[in-house]
Length: 95
Image (cartoon, rainbow, N blue to C red; front, side, top):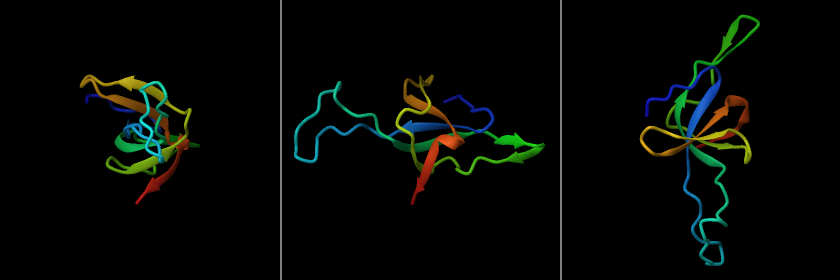
Protein backbone atom coordinates (compact mmCIF):
# COMPACT_ATOMS: atom_id res chain seq x y z
CA UNK A 1 0.00 0.00 0.00
CA UNK A 2 1.39 3.38 -0.97
CA UNK A 3 -0.78 5.57 1.28
CA UNK A 4 0.80 7.80 3.92
CA UNK A 5 -1.62 9.50 6.30
CA UNK A 6 -1.16 13.20 6.98
CA UNK A 7 -1.25 14.95 10.34
CA UNK A 8 -2.92 12.97 13.10
CA UNK A 9 -4.64 10.50 10.79
CA UNK A 10 -4.34 6.71 10.99
CA UNK A 11 -4.98 4.07 8.32
CA UNK A 12 -6.65 0.92 9.64
CA UNK A 13 -7.29 -2.48 8.04
CA UNK A 14 -10.75 -3.30 9.33
CA UNK A 15 -11.39 -6.72 10.89
CA UNK A 16 -13.66 -9.03 8.92
CA UNK A 17 -17.40 -8.81 9.63
CA UNK A 18 -18.96 -11.68 11.55
CA UNK A 19 -20.39 -14.39 9.31
CA UNK A 20 -22.72 -15.86 11.96
CA UNK A 21 -24.56 -14.63 15.04
CA UNK A 22 -23.93 -15.93 18.56
CA UNK A 23 -26.90 -18.28 18.12
CA UNK A 24 -25.50 -19.69 14.86
CA UNK A 25 -27.57 -17.83 12.26
CA UNK A 26 -25.68 -17.14 9.03
CA UNK A 27 -25.69 -13.46 8.04
CA UNK A 28 -26.05 -12.17 4.49
CA UNK A 29 -23.56 -9.59 3.25
CA UNK A 30 -26.18 -6.83 3.58
CA UNK A 31 -26.94 -7.57 7.23
CA UNK A 32 -23.34 -7.84 8.46
CA UNK A 33 -22.45 -5.07 10.87
CA UNK A 34 -19.35 -3.01 10.17
CA UNK A 35 -16.60 -4.01 12.64
CA UNK A 36 -15.36 -1.37 15.07
CA UNK A 37 -11.85 -2.72 15.40
CA UNK A 38 -8.89 -3.29 13.18
CA UNK A 39 -5.13 -3.26 12.76
CA UNK A 40 -3.17 -0.02 12.33
CA UNK A 41 -1.36 -0.06 8.98
CA UNK A 42 0.13 3.47 8.86
CA UNK A 43 0.30 6.52 11.12
CA UNK A 44 0.76 10.23 10.37
CA UNK A 45 3.39 12.34 12.12
CA UNK A 46 0.92 13.92 14.55
CA UNK A 47 -0.62 17.36 14.91
CA UNK A 48 0.71 20.68 16.11
CA UNK A 49 -0.76 22.37 19.17
CA UNK A 50 0.63 25.85 19.82
CA UNK A 51 3.82 24.98 17.96
CA UNK A 52 4.42 21.64 19.70
CA UNK A 53 4.12 18.39 17.73
CA UNK A 54 1.84 15.91 19.49
CA UNK A 55 2.56 12.43 18.08
CA UNK A 56 -0.16 9.89 17.33
CA UNK A 57 -0.47 7.51 20.33
CA UNK A 58 -0.55 4.29 18.25
CA UNK A 59 1.92 2.56 15.96
CA UNK A 60 1.62 0.24 12.95
CA UNK A 61 0.66 -3.25 14.09
CA UNK A 62 -1.53 -2.11 17.02
CA UNK A 63 -5.09 -3.43 17.15
CA UNK A 64 -7.53 -0.63 17.98
CA UNK A 65 -11.20 0.01 18.67
CA UNK A 66 -12.74 3.06 16.97
CA UNK A 67 -16.07 4.80 16.48
CA UNK A 68 -18.75 3.06 14.45
CA UNK A 69 -19.46 5.96 12.12
CA UNK A 70 -16.06 7.63 12.13
CA UNK A 71 -13.54 7.80 9.35
CA UNK A 72 -13.50 7.47 5.59
CA UNK A 73 -13.64 4.09 3.84
CA UNK A 74 -11.11 3.76 1.01
CA UNK A 75 -9.79 1.08 -1.32
CA UNK A 76 -6.00 0.86 -1.51
CA UNK A 77 -4.03 0.27 -4.68
CA UNK A 78 -3.75 -3.36 -3.56
CA UNK A 79 -7.57 -3.74 -3.73
CA UNK A 80 -7.93 -4.01 0.07
CA UNK A 81 -10.48 -1.98 2.06
CA UNK A 82 -9.14 0.47 4.66
CA UNK A 83 -10.48 3.18 6.99
CA UNK A 84 -8.75 6.54 7.52
CA UNK A 85 -9.47 8.07 10.94
CA UNK A 86 -8.21 10.92 13.07
CA UNK A 87 -6.36 9.80 16.20
CA UNK A 88 -9.15 11.42 18.28
CA UNK A 89 -11.62 8.85 16.82
CA UNK A 90 -9.68 5.94 18.36
CA UNK A 91 -11.09 4.67 21.65
CA UNK A 92 -8.61 2.02 22.80
CA UNK A 93 -5.63 -0.16 21.95
CA UNK A 94 -6.17 -3.89 22.46
CA UNK A 95 -3.48 -5.94 24.14
